[in-house]
Image (cartoon, rainbow, N blue to C red; front, side, top):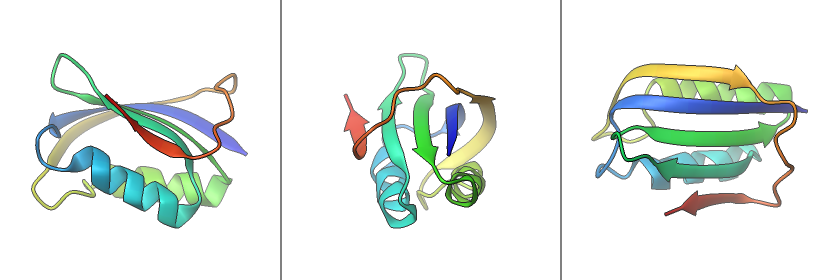
Amino acid sequence: MKKVSMNIQGHVQGVGFRYTAKTLADQLGVTGNVRNEEDGSVTINAVGKNKAIDEFVLKIKNSPSPAGHVTYVDISDSPYLEDFEQFTITI
């Protein structure tokens, strides 16, 4: 099981980024949450099988939202991240 936290920067708010991240997470069996930050970035906490997380991260880096554009992703392993039952959008 792999647990990561990501801060995504670029044109990622107001473009359906959180919704498409949730859809992608659900397809891959990844749990966690996604939320907008006041600085215009998006934060994702994700938990899942190694392969699923690797694919999720790759697709996030390429922006799952067609209208979005990712310029930078800061990723850190978060072994103490709680286990989630599902992937949710946090407001």
